[in-house]
Every structure is written in C-alpha cells, then in structure tokens.
Amino acid sequence: MTKRSNHVVPSSSRWAVKKTGSERASKTFDTKEKAVEYGRELSKMEKTELYIHKANGMIQNRTSYGNDPYPPKDTRY
Image 1 (cartoon, rainbow, N blue to C red):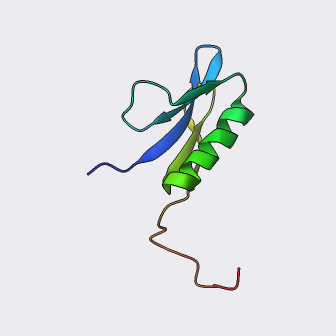
Image 2 (cartoon, one colour):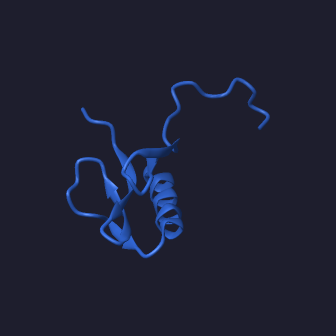
Image 3 (tube, helix red, strand yellow):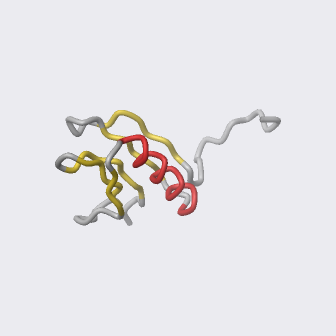
C-alpha cells in the first residue's frame, strides 16, 4: 500500500499540485504561493502529507495533515 500525499512541483513556467504516482496535475498556478495554499487545503481535506519542492525539484518542506504516528504529548496546544 502506497502512502497518499500531494506535491507542489515546478511545471515548465508554472507550479503544479500533483498526487503521488499521478502523471497529471490536479491544478496548476502562476505562483508557488498560490500552489502551496491550494496544496495545503487539499491535504487538510484528504488528511495526507504535503511535499513542497524547490524550483530545481528537490524537497524544500514536508508537512503532515494526516494521522501523526508520534502526536505531541502536551495536549493543551
């Protein structure tokens, strides 16, 4: 079973949000900021991880919106 996640990746002169294993983008954007905003909302809805890539394709940041296997012990926050 593969892990479901979304990726914000460069796509020619635009930015795209793609699901893991998908060849087609879910949606494309003119700016990285708009793509990240859409990717966050999508990942929160689907409870998946979001990978944000740099312009050269390397992973810049990763955030999990799913079930965290190591939740924080302090539940006040």
